[in-house]
Length: 357
Image 1 (cartoon, one colour):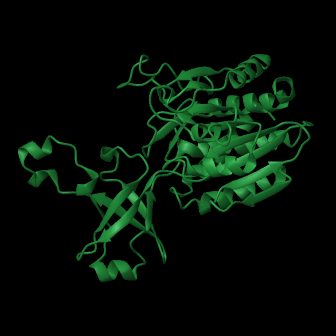
Image 2 (image 1 turned 135 degrees about the vertical axis):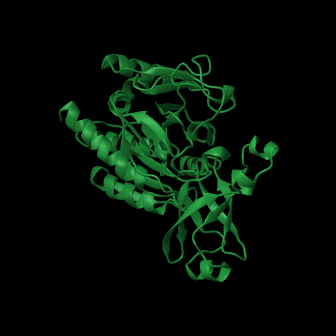
């Protein structure tokens, strides 16, 4: 497939998955999409008790778990006031200022409803209050309800999930923007890797896993790895670059458009310290096909790899990520070329597994 065609396939897949909605604990829409995309390229596919999607390609060699989380950060209704306005809690790591004045979708029992996140107008704030960021506790969701009874009749209840109403859009020079590239980008990589592997003769057992509840504690990765007991694993995710105003290269030397990021250490070692053999395997596989890559050493944030590598007596694990600007916001930005390079790298690495493990 020509490179332009391959990038177009990746773009369309990323658009479809990033436009889907599935906050932590409510990943069913995304899981359904993922199952549909993977079923043609694997021997078996199932959903475990936790809700993880596990697709297996059987082989006689060592087993590798490729994990990408399905969930996105979101909100949940905790209270409906007498006037029909909704108070909420955050599900996952939001920076409060990114929430204010956003349009949202409330996934009620009678179907989705649009709403907007509002707060006290600055026009009536005291001078000192205007200088302070608005906390999420002082925000509310307006769905246009007349009162609490009306909101309930529209299908809103305590526990209704809320996601951002934001859709995929192209930017210049192969860059794109949307919500939830963290981690729909990882799911697209997972699909394309399994598609390519289905055309190759390899001995490896490959488990393609869409995990649940990563954003709230790496929960699905922990349970799925415990059940699968793979010989090694890779988490596919996104990470923070330092290539835009407000952040410096000393904070993060990573750049979008410079290839996937092979994590050496994240969260200053409190998360993952990548297994040395995993690093050697990935770096040498990249060199073999002249694939660009970056090395990541981070002080904050981690991935499913942290939970996987501590499972049972330990599983050699690494992370391959896509540098993505404005993570955990409705306007995340990445470069499609990085996804293609990541797919190329992981396919070659899986082909090479017998030489390293």
